[in-house]
Image (cartoon, rainbow, N blue to C red; front, top):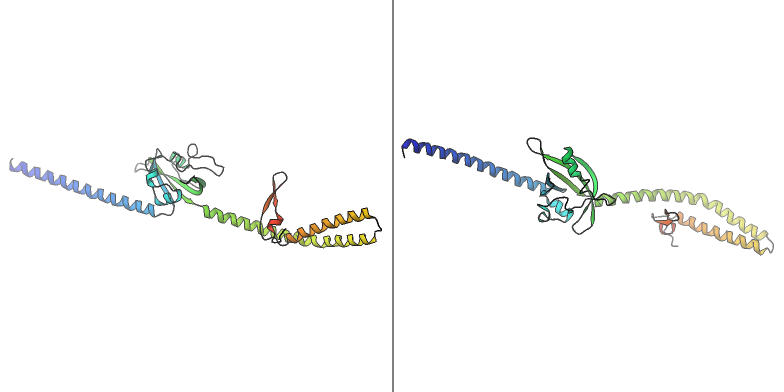
Length: 256
């Protein structure tokens, strides 16, 4: 081989090796950045998953596994409409096929949420979650997938329920106390009047019987008033016409 050709060959090979080395360096950097990104996603307290435009899972972080019970091995390569999470609204309507918020985000090219939905845990129970969705774009602005974040709000909803019950109890106690105070005095006056009427009657046993019935009803009302003044809880019961009313016996600290 002539020396000039050998020199050119060595030069070309050196350039090729230099380019290959640079590509390998960039590849290692991309792999390192990708690993770092996955570590950040896995460290999040919220569930995060990413799908491609066909809704195939490509990222599933540790919080997603903790909240749903499904591991990465359970979901990777599958589709989010495969009834894995089985999103439903509060009425139990399935949202994964016709009302998927992630699909809406990818189609509309915008983020949505937060919205409260229910997902199916691996053990079969329904868990209330607050979700947000958004599209993912490539360098040219094309939608290449979607991302959903979700958090378990079971404790938050329970606190909200307890707060509502506390406010209801405060209102009930205030109204019951006021009603008991306003009713007690006229009721005592009626009981006293019944006693006077009984003493003024002759031996009319029929009328006295009526007065006895009225007096028994008054004492029953008086007992209810006492319970109204000692309400410490908020319990309801069914009434005629599918109406819910306060269960005074169970709400009072006086035994029936």
